[in-house]
Amino acid sequence: MVFSAENALQAHEAEQRYVENDMRKQARYDLARRGIVATETEIAKWKKENLKNIESSEQVRGITFL
Image (tube, rainbow, N blue to C red; front, side, top):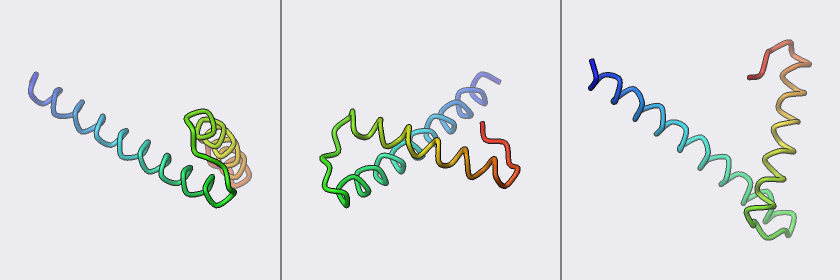
């Protein structure tokens, strides 16, 4: 049972890393397109801005965003 829980946790963490890395890649690409250096601060701003956009578009369609 412990091994199953450990495997589930590792799979969850791997998925989180994948999603985070993909989002950071998108942020770097978008910021570079706008001529902005992709510092940690700029990536955090981009992420905050885009999460708001995603939440608002999901709410318009009636989908709950968690």
